[in-house]
Length: 311
Image 1 (tube, rainbow, N blue to C red):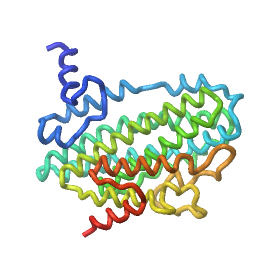
Image 2: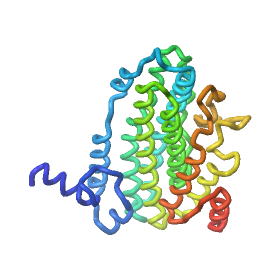
Image 3: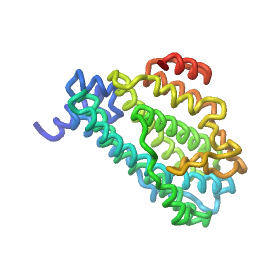
Image 4: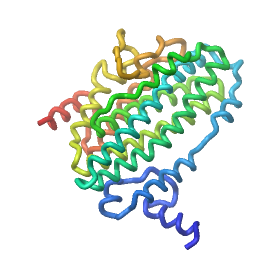
């Protein structure tokens, strides 16, 4: 078999020849006898397919045409993106620990965990593009870039939690990031910055899709109850929840880690800290349905469904 034929045969196992997020991961491993290398190869194909150059996109930005709102957004985005590396580091650590815990008990769940931990290396690399693109702009424009102490503080690795809750929280975070970047891309008048924002937003949507796929696999396995998904969704969509976190008058004090939405500056110019809130809510409801099969359409329905699942 040639290399091209072998690559094609692996691609067909996903149901498409185009690289994509692997659908129905638990069924693929448990019923269709996909191997971990099949899954990991598809992850790699998709990563290669979507790679881009932060340096190239930065060269296309006309710094002299950036508005005060553009500069405000760039400053806050750079600081927020500093917290993604510890998030990815936590996923890698937690996924491997969970893989070992499930080996011999439910080997398919163990494989899902290992696939998740393996994919986190691509998530980490892609988020590095976001972090460095925005913080390079902060440096170049002298926009109070993060000092060394801030970088170290923002690198605190998040504490461990139940894996399904963790994946759901990350899916919700990616929803918030993706909508925010895409909403501001519609506001900026500088085409180079718009192109960068749209590229970063597309990455965040892809990351969301991966977190949904891994979370769905855990629910499909029966090893993780769906109530964990509803609990985290409620944390975000409830009145005063994490979707609105940047607008709360008092931010949470956390000794263990930094949440980026606790540390945004007050809104300025065309930048609203509630950009796209309705879209964020709708995408969160859709995420719940994709992971659990349960349909919710409001914060009250999220809460009622969650409480109905609590023992």
